[in-house]
Structure formats: structure tokens, C-alpha cells
Amino acid sequence: MEDLTRLIDRLETDQVLNREDFIRLIREHTPDTDEYLFQKADRLRQQSYGNEIYIRGLIELTNYCKNDCLYCGIRRSNRSAQRYRLDQEDIMECCRTGYELGFRTFVLQGGEDGWYTDEKVCRILTSIKHDYPDCAVTLSLGERSRKTYQAWFDAGADRYLLRHETATPEHYAKLHPPELSLAHRMECLRDLKEIGYQTGCGFMVGSPFQTTEHLAEDLLYIHKLRPQMVGIGPFIPHHDTPFAKEPAGTVNDTLFFLAIIRLMLPKVLLPATTALGTIDPNGREKGVHAGANVIMPNLSPLSVRKKYMLYDNKISTGEEAAESIDSLRKRMAAIGCQVIVGRGDYKK
Ligand code: 5AD
Image (cartoon, rainbow, N blue to C red; front, side, top):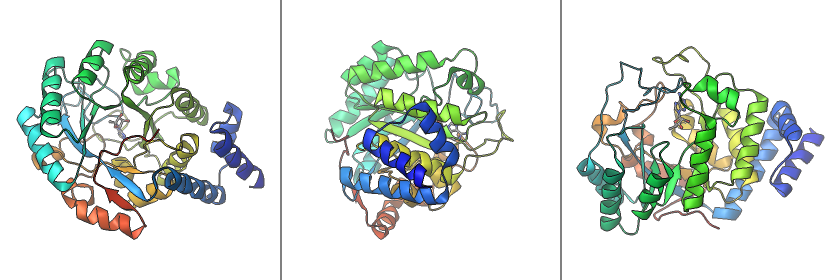
């Protein structure tokens, strides 16, 4: 215990450990050392962002996807998924609702769907930025060419989320079909960062075949990339995927990695994810106490929410819904935090 807390101190000071020490920390952490780690992460969150929690309105554009990721409920070979896509008018309606509720960041997320051509997304961005010049737009539309990323950036996109999923090629190959590669994913992330996006990577905790070594590799990759955002949530099985019978990641392991990320990147924008809220009704609060400072309520039209099922029982109504923002405000106030109306940019 004594020894491990020294390791945590060193992680805080150096913002990184070597591979062996990361592996030790991941293998040997205990409820006591977690308590120590979470307190440090919570304190660092406060030093960077005070008591402010940033909110993002998540608009799930489309559940059409040309990819076939083995863990994902909207993979192309899932014939049971009822497919939908939102057009520009639908999206603008979501933004209108969101703006009135106090959202100043809209996250346009979707499967990799060719219907959203470069031009179409540019028109959507132009329209949102015209109507809501005080808002930030985050895109999360998967792997595209550098040229496309540049065009979307020029049309006004501010941020881009693209989880790397795992930083070990062999593990990546076990989670994805052969036509997808980690090398290309990482190239996309490099491009996004160079273009000037506030860029987010991330991974699932407890994904099938994941080992301690893989997780250490994820942390080293994040240290190297220095993203402005990191998305981390538990893996949760989806009944229509090859991983239907695999166990879910745990709440505590997810909190452990959130806290480590906060120590590595004190300023990072770190969401308490929907997946964390799905496996624990107090996931959001617990996430904040482990260093998270962002929450992304669901702003999709009610008619499509149940269709964007990345994993079983994904929450989309109640506390998770954008329209429940008042109860989210109260819940955050109860733990001493304030939900902010504003873009909530990365603080350099
Ligand atoms: N469990 C948890 N997270 C998942 N995602 C996709 N499928 C699942 C699942 N079964 C995550 C991936 C992806 C993000 C949009 O959702 O990490 O990057």
C-alpha cells in the first residue's frame, strides 16, 4: 500500500509512469489506494476547472454504419437494428431545443454513414454556426480522410472525438474486422490534432481480451498523443453482437482509469460517460469524484433514441436526457458542482 501510493504520487508529479510501473499500478491497486487516487484526481479537477461541470448535447445523427466492430450494437451485420438518419432540419431542431435548455456545445455523433457526404456535413456545420455563433460543435463521425477533416474544420467544427479503442494492434484486431487497422485510426487522430481540432481519443474498460499490458499501452499512447479530451467507459455487451456473452467492465475499474487520466492530463476534458451512467445510477457523480468534468446528456429526437443502441440497456431518457437538465443541475449541486452554460473549451 505504502509503496503504491508513492507510485501514485510519482504519477501526479511526472504525469506518466514507465510501462512496468503502470502495469504494477493496474495489477496491485486496492480500495485503499483507489481512495487515495480518486482524492487526488478530484482535487486536480477542481484546480483545473473549479466546481464547474461542462455539458454537451449529444445528437446521434445516424445508426447506419459501414463498419462491423464486434462489440458494437449498430455494426452493419446487425440485421435487427432499425436504421435511421437525421437530416439537416432534424438536427437544427435538436440544436434549437438544446440551446434553450442551456447547451452551448453540440456533439454530432454517428456511425460511419456515407449518406453524410463532406458537403452535407459542411452545410450542417455552416447552418449551426450561423444560427448559434456562440456554440461549439464536436464531431464524432469516425474515420475520414484528412481532406474531409480539414473541410469540416474550415466549416466551423471545433472538436473531434475518435476513440482509439485499444493501442495494441493485436487487441485491436480482435475487436474489429480485418479491414480496420489501429495504424489508420492513429493516423486519423494525428491528422485531427495537427489540423487544430480539440481532439479526443479513448477506450473501453473491460473490453473482451483486454489485458493489463493493453491498458498500460493505452495510457502510454494517451501520454504521447496529449489529447484535449479522453472518452472512457465500461464495455457493455450487446445481445446482437459476437460479444453478447462477454462480461461488462466494472464501475470501479472505469473510475480507476478516469482518475489516472486526470493525473496524467490535469486539464483534460473528461466525460463521465453514458456507459458509466448505464451500469451505475450514480455513475455520473462517482465519475466526477474520480476526476471527470464533462457530462453529455442525450439531445437526440425521442423517436430515435432507442435505436442508437451501442450496447444493451443504454440509457437515453430520465436523468440521461437533455430535457432533464434541471435534475442534473440539482444532482451536481448536491456534490458541490455547478453545471455551466457555455462552450466549455479546453483550458490551455
Ligand atoms: N460497450 C461500451 N461502449 C461501446 N462503444 C461501442 N460499443 C460499445 C459497447 N458495447 C463505444 C466505443 C465507441 C463509442 C461511440 O461507443 O468505444 O467509440
